[in-house]
Amino acid sequence: MPLLQLALVALTQGITEFLPVSSSGHLILLPGLTGYADQGQVIDVAVHLGTLTAVVIYFWRDVRIGLTGLPRLARGRVDSDGARLALGLIIATIPTVLFGAALHFSGLSDALRSPAVIGWTMLIFGIVLYVADQKGAEGKVAQDWGPRDALIMGLWQMIALIPGTSRSGITITGARQLGYNREDGARIAMLMSIPTIIASGVLLGTEVALDADMALIRDAGIAAALAMLSALAALSLMMRLLRSVSFTPYVIYRVILGLVLLGYAYSG
Image (cartoon, rainbow, N blue to C red; front, top):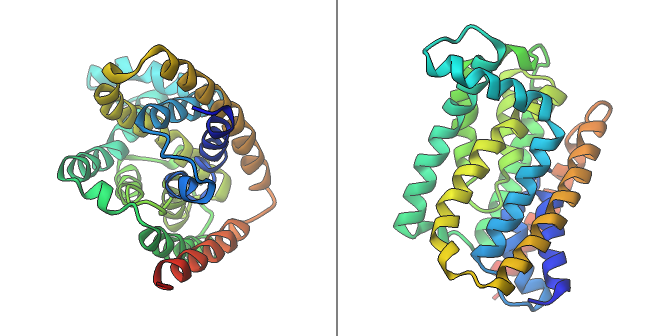
């Protein structure tokens, strides 16, 4: 695969995975915009592993707390910050895994990969994010996150399997609707991405691993590294900006892109 294509895929995934603008939507649109063939599932899995590495590195303190809570949770004890975080992440991931499996094995996931679908989801969920961000209270912090809020945010996250919705965008929408402040809402949303990306990687990785040759494995390694570096930069920038800026710039981008895609989709 050409190095330029690998770089474009990796940078697109890395930059858009944690911004509320939909990485999957941009990856679907990329071949049509560049003229390159679809990059394939091996590269898709690789860039997702790269962004997974980025969020683990950036939020390592929280990840470590969650990991230390797993043994206590396995013993049925939810009496520490780590155990509560681990339980919340498990609860939040279940709806996405179930809905994702249903879409994947029914073939509906391929049917949704169209400019019209991405245009509508970009537009609609961009407006939903704006309303939740502007109207939502800011009284809750990350330490208030419990099973009920985890389930609600998990149901929001489930919708992100429709291309163009944005996993980070829809979970941040859910967090703001529940009353979490912008920074902590985004922090929870990013942590929720970890088990979700792992589940997606396992599902897709087992299907494509046997078909990968050495050249494809090399390309996957390059793409994963570039995706990790770009995701770290984008994540760091967004978390810094949230201390002083709302989600409105991302909403404006989503609305403009959504309208352009809808115009393209229905022009013929």
